[in-house]
Length: 201
Image (tube, rainbow, N blue to C red; front, side):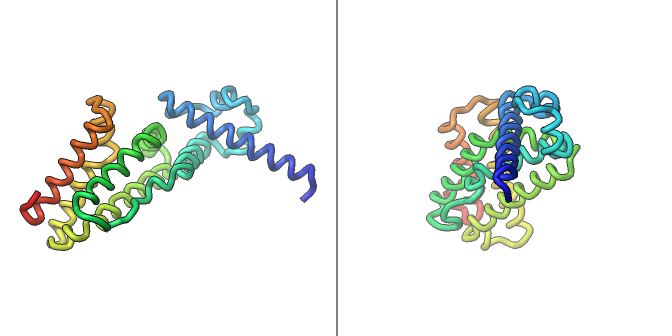
């Protein structure tokens, strides 16, 4: 590749990143469906260039969501999955979900709002939901493994729902709980659900 071509590629990469970062900034501000024109003006990248980099608005928003998730994707990994005492595992799960909410809330809000209109974004949302749901099952296998199939699915679903993004929105945003109070409420709730397995706290 020639030096000139290298320069064009580098400029294209910089401009693309600037556009995607601008979309994220707009998500943070509460604009979850910015137009290509708005993004072009705000990012300083020409409208023509934006349309060269991205097929359409759906492609732009999908890639902006994917980029943000990729940047903090390590938060989706639950350290020491399935290891430790019940109390330690409950705290690890709650801390992970609170971190995800703190770092990704604007992006997740945008993804959930756009999912009904975009199969690609809907697939992103679905894949992440399945990942987190599967983590709950693996993380609490010592407790869930004692249950029959139906009850196992019921308890796992309840734990996942209690720690879901929607629940965190209710606790942190609508109810205005501090991180420490939200953490305490979630730990208490998950512990209570799991204690039903053997009748102990």
